Length: 468
Image 1 (tube, helix red, strand yellow):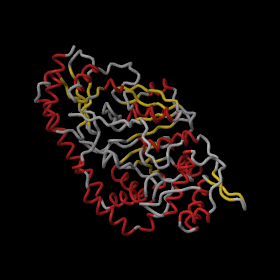
Image 2: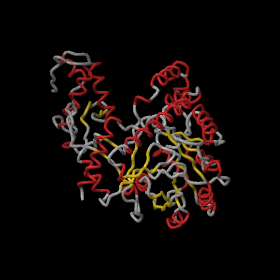
Image 3: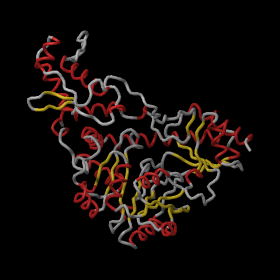
C-alpha cells in the first residue's frame, strides 16, 4: 500500500499525489509493471475522495508513467534508463559554464551604444499606442517577410535616405542578420562558394562555415574589394561592404562598383550581398548611392540593420531582394514565420513613420561628429602625437590610428590588455595574413568613455617605449 504524508501540502492534493507516485516510479521504489492501489482503496486508506485519486492517476497516465489494463487496474510503466533519471523533486546543477562577457577599463574596440542616447521616452509612448490601438494585429501571425507597416516604413526610409526605390514586398525582416544569412543561403543554394573581404569581419566566415558553406577570402586595395581577388576566390557570391567597409573605413568609388557589378553579371550563378551596416553616420556630404540602386540585372541583395542606428539589443534587421529572388522565397519558404515579434515591428514602424527615426539619426550624427572630433583632439594633444597618425574616413563610428613602431601588434595588444585596455589592430582582421597591415589600430568611439581616454593613451605611449 502506498502511504504518503499529507501534512503541510502546498497546492492541490491530486498534484501532490501525482508527484509522489511519479517520484517513486523514477527512483525505482515502484518497480516497472507493479500494480498500484485501486482508486477506492487508495482513497479509503488516506481519507480522501476517489475523484482526487482519479485526477492524479489520469495525469500519470497522460505522461506515460502509468498504464491501465481493463478490469485489472493501474500499473507502473517501464521507463528506459531509470538509473540515470534525476529526482523529480530535486534541483539539477551541471557543470555548464556560460561564457562571460569580459569587462575592460577602456575598450577601443567595443561597438556598444550608450543608453543615454536611446530615445526611451518616445519609444515608450509609441509602445503604449501600439498596445492600445493594434490589439487584433498583435495576435495575428505575420508573414515570413514581416508586417506590411514596417516594410512600407523601411521602403520610405530607403527612398528618402538612400535614394532606393523598392517595393515593400521586396523587403524581408528578420531578427538579426545571422538569420537573414540563413535565408540567403537557402535561396541561392548551399553548393555555392561565398567570398568575404580581407581585411574583414571574420565572424561572417564562421557563420557561413557553420552552415556548411564554402567560404573564401577576396583581397582589397585602397578602393575596396578587387575583381582579381573575387576571381581568385572562385566564389559565386560576394559578401562585401562597399559603402563603409569595416575595419578599413574604405568607401568604394563608382568605377570600382561598376567593375564589381560586371563581375557579378558575367555568370548567372553570381550574386553580391551588399552589407550597408554603419553607413547612416556619414560625417560629410550625401550618402553614396548603393550598389542595389545602380544594379540593372538583379544581382544585388541589400542588407541593413537597426542595431547601430538604435541599439544592438533591438534585433531587427532587413534585406531587400531582387524581384526574382523574393518570388522564389515566397514560393519555397512561405511556411516560415517572421522571427521578429509583431509588437516590436509595429513599434519600429510607427517610430519611423512619425519621423522620429530620421530625427534620431540626425541627432546622433551630430553627436558622433562632435565625439569623433574630441577623441582626435585628445590624441593629437597627447604624447602619441609624434609617433602616430590618424587615418580618417567620412563615415562610420571608427577610424584607424597608425603607430610608428616595430613592436608586433599582438605584443602591444597583450601589454595593454594586462592594464585593462582592449584594442584591436587591422592585422587581426587580415584573414589571409598576406598583406602588411601592421601597426594600424582601430579606434571605435561610439561608446568610448571620454574620461579615461587620456590615461589609456599614456599607457599606450608607455608600452611603445618599454615593450620590445
